[in-house]
Image (cartoon, rainbow, N blue to C red; front, side, top):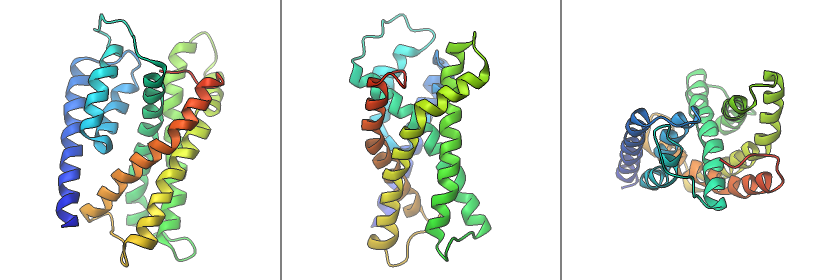
Length: 218
């Protein structure tokens, strides 16, 4: 039963990814990195990502004549989505690295996933933030934009990974006697849930960063 549910969730996620990606291709975002972020969020948020994209993402399309009338909460949601996109990309890249190398830490595959995926999620999270900041700071050196990206997104990335890793621990130690592996659909369904929880945990952090003026609302 769980395998069937996992396949359904993954298919919905992939279809949502494709729907958003096709529309983004037709209506590119003013902030280029969001062309990648919105489809990635479709993978784990499914139809909810489609709804948020057409409600808020389209307002930022280059060919949109609509005024950006989003509420602050919506802008924080988009900012958190941006962080989630970078983290998710890094986490997905990290999974096959651990699986193919057979890496363990203290005899644990989970700890290896934690290390590799945190490093890559942080790296891509900062890169995604840099690609959002630098076009707005063209009169400044790239190094300045890079420092701004680290300052703006570090806490956001850390909280995302805390939420995600917490769920991974539950999956590994509580839900399964033999945790699913990356070759099983259940593993990726659990990862979809992990991304949603990571997003929810990072949302307050993004709100705080924006309220303090450390991070710009998108």
